[in-house]
Length: 217
Image 1 (spheres, helix red, strand yellow):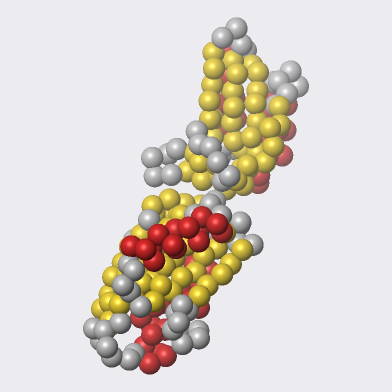
Image 2 (cartoon, rainbow, N blue to C red; image 1 turned 180 degrees about the vertical axis):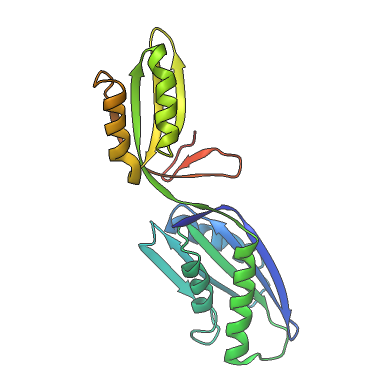
């Protein structure tokens, strides 16, 4: 799945009706509803605020036509989120009615078009599943660990140098067994990774690691 790392905005005018699209990152259903309330407040004079959101790794999904004919607004907006395989996302399309009816087909096309444009202008990142490990090594062993992490497609989060080297790292779930086997072989079983548990994470445009559920590195 993917997550939103940069908000996307769009705007189209169809038969004098103005459609404003916005894609937001949200961490929960409550945050999605809070952001939606802010959008309603900002565009208080608009007739409709059609929306869709997906949270909790796709487990929570909801959309609303907000007064438009059933299936003409919320459904095409949700379809954009589904096609993009997004989670932790709220997509809102605000409509200022221009006085001319668009018909159900026209509404569906307009909402789908502006929703997709907002998504196209946003920044997205792949949501990764991995395991967090802590290792204690000698200075000589530390150089070998860097190679092991890179080979596994992992991320070295933090390294502290004192009497020993303390390292924290992430390893993708798909490479976890191979990483542990190579680590045991490389260090002849003398370095045992401390398993800190599974984490969901993504990397932003600056290369920073962010954990779903809070925290960054």
